[in-house]
Amino acid sequence: MKRKREQEGAGMSHAVMDDFDVFLNHRGPDVKATFVAHLEEALRCAGFRPFLDARSQIKGNPALKSIDQALDVANVHVAVVSKRYAESKYCLTELVAIMRSGKPVIPVFYDVEPVDLRWVEDGPFAEAFEKHKSRGRTESTDTKLQEWRDALQALSEITGFRSADYKRDEALLKRDVVNEVSRLTPSNQPVEVEQFRVGLDGSVNRCIQILEDIGAGPGMLGLVGMGGIGKTTLAREIYNHFVALRRFKHMTFLEIHRDSSTSNVEVRPTQSMDLRKQLLWDLLSVPDNSSKSNYSSWFRKLSTLGPVFIAVDDVHKLGQFEELIPFTSVLHPDSRLIVTSRDRGVLNHVAGKSKLNHHVFDVCPLDWNEANELFNWHAFQARKAVKGYEGVAKDVVRACSGVPLALKVVGSSLFDKQLDGDEETIWQEAVIELRKNTDVMGVLRWSYDNLPESEKHMFLDITCLFLGRSREEAFAYWGSCKNCMSCGGVPVPYISLRNLINKNLVMSIEDHGLRDGFKVHDLLKELGQEIGMKTKRHFVNGRDAEAIVTKNQVRFFSVISFMNLMI
Image 1: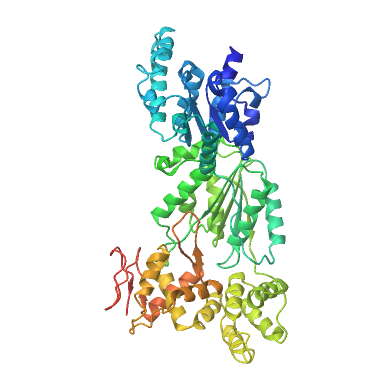
Image 2: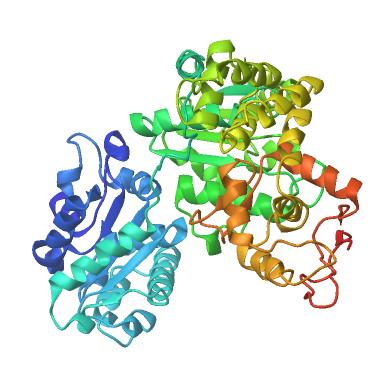
């Protein structure tokens, strides 16, 4: 019986749970020596770790007791349904668990049709089901038979691969299945980091050591500091360290963004929903259409995983954390969390209420040498200042008070100001103006004030109107302003946007799973909205955006709120 079980179905031991990521559900005597063997080899060549049969088990571990563990850990399931598939109660039982898991499943209809799975009493599976019935009719048996029927019917409704479509070209069928597994399998990819890594190594190493020594049970590292100090940068570096280390099989980096249409700290419900979907996909491979159900129920499934690594960036209040991490008791004891916030009280509250072992790390300004180096990279694209600018560069750095965001933005703004005479004019003016400002916002305001008028208009448009909107909408709007004399407009929007990006005032979002759009640091967003309200060019006071424009301009966005362009 054990030998037959090993041939027909796939199971595994708890000891090797983390050693595979694709579960191959199949009836061994039909396809194991042919198609499934070739598919397994192709998956391994593609870098996957498929679980097939007894070769994946460790002696001394009962296979029957480990099926549920195997199905919970696998990222993707492949169900190869052959003509005699239904003869195996083990394959059918596995299929029931697969369909209940909510994880991606790829059907391969091998010499059968999807319709055969819908009407098991009449098709090629009829004889097998009659045999199952004849082994004894009990309430338990009837329930199991109905579960098998339901699972087969549910599988038939998923778009899969029909061997008949490939005219016996199994090499092509195998390739297409591997490609689909690749598409559906999440992977821990490094997140984007700063171009110039200055003053990070010491903090990164200390934080990694804290996470290593945090004690028994799930642990949390809180990163606290003022806006622009480099909390997100540090969190990303730590996250990428563990990605490279491959210590955690399941990882996610969640970025909370404040409501882009207001200056409050609320998070839009749609963003919370998107972050929940991201967490479930990154950690459990749950597709969007499955994650709409009860989030807490899905989150409890994290208990089936090994250690997880979760980073939550820019938490403003406890409720935001709890929306994403409703409880920590289900996390593996070796799991680790990183949470960043401007508010130490929020971090202590999060750790206290969730009863996590925790440590709060203060992210401090850069020291004098580090600040000089970071500024020089952005202003001169070199470690040291250009000859003749050493003194004035140090004066600018001193005014930025070691805050990385200020050093980056001001340095980038001065990058193209190295022509003859600029040392005595623009750079000296920069020093004078920056010395007047005692806070970071004032330093950032200087960078805005030195923009050409068209770039000022674009910066205000982005921070007041187009955060959360697509680039297409923004460029259509700016295109309508080309011949507008009443507002100055943005006559060369593509050039202006490139200049804002080069000056680190705006980031462009492309190919990040979102529609193309814009991203702006919270401090710069607050600066733009404050200027927009004071200049009455933009009025900011609501949840969404509306632009009402004149004559030869078009009207954008449905009227959902109270943010208007006043011209």
